[in-house]
Image 1: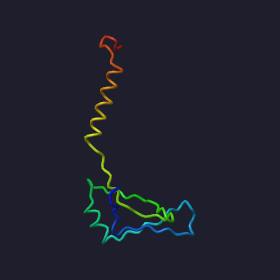
Image 2 (image 1 turned 120 degrees about the horizontal axis):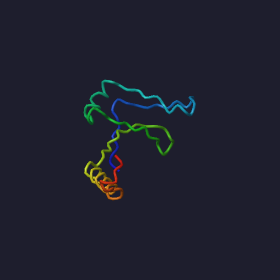
Image 3 (image 1 turned 30 degrees about the vertical axis):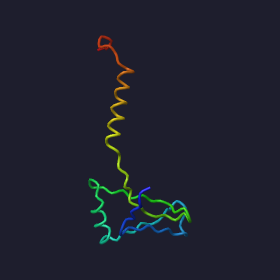
Image 4 (image 1 turned 45 degrees about the vertical axis):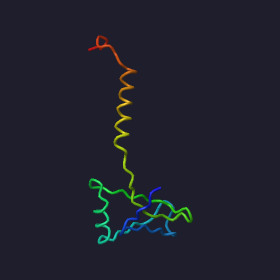
Length: 97
């Protein structure tokens, strides 16, 4: 597992007095968070995960750094398409229209 990157200027707080369906409140310090967003920009997006600590179940935030493997996705899509074509290949004279 890669080192976790905690968002600078973004915090989640849990209030024990609220109902269970309220996970927490996120606070953002704009002055700190904007440079963090610019540093980790991914085509205009960043993804933040809300996770629970194992020790006490309290929430915390981590930058989601996962990126799809483009080459693997392209190869698997090509294999799936060729398999579909082989399985359902119809002669051209069987087309009803």
